[in-house]
Image (cartoon, rainbow, N blue to C red; front, top):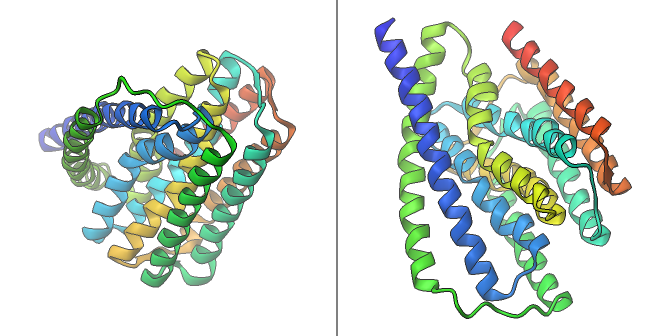
Amino acid sequence: MENLFIQLIILLFSLGVLIYFSDKLIDASVRLARASGISDAIIGLTLLAYGTSMPELTVSSISSIGLHPELAISNVMGSNIVNISLIVGLAAFIRPYSIKEKKLVKRDNYVMVLSTFLLVSMLFFLNGIPRIAGMIMMLFVAGFTYYVIKHDRAQHKLKKDTTISKKKEWGIIFVSLLAVVASGRFAVDSAVSVATGFGVTEWVIGATVVALGTSLPELAVSITAAKKGYFSMSLGNIVGSNIFNILWVLGFSASVSALTVDFNMIKWDSLLLIGVTLMFAYHLVRARFSRVTGIVYMVVYACYVVYLLAY
């Protein structure tokens, strides 16, 4: 019991370090983007999305290397559900908002929905993600990111911030990446120990404690951006993060080691992921998130947590 308590402390501390340095990584990435003249929406969709997905990438890839595919997949699926149902719901509840950049949202909305269906289809038909599929997913998201940034620069001629020291920001990024990788390793090892100690599956731990922990950067960034009125950045962060979690995080993890899972064990999680993604996509098309919408989203998340704990 004492060892279990120690592992739980290590898990929580590791997630804390992971979140802290992910935040530093995000801030440095944003400053570099400002220095390059990239718009708020694209910062949210690309750099912030990549940055806030770093905890998921670290946890899932290390889980893959350590032959814990259930933890790798549940971390991403759980994080995407948290991103939509809890984070978007909480942001809308705190401050209802509407979207101005509808063309950008429409394009990336399609990619998010298709990525989700691609993931669930592979889990259903292949019981996992083969290595070749992971490599293709990474190539696609790299091409998508290049297109988004290039298209944004063509559409928005923004002034570069020349007061920012790029060398300093790259130094912060390097140190933060090292800390994120190290803390992610400790988080995975302790999460597996906690799951074993409590007699619950790695899937449940991954979809609850680890997923919520690795989604805290998205929560902090999106809520802060929404409160300050940067709604395009807030939603761009969630849409981009959900895309990158599937295509980049699971793509990289599967490239390292093929991911396998019993679909019968995760069918309800998969259906919920599709459901909340379609619900989110619908409200993105409507371009408006009311306080009532936020409450509905949060109730969905609460029901999901109850289901997992009962499971």
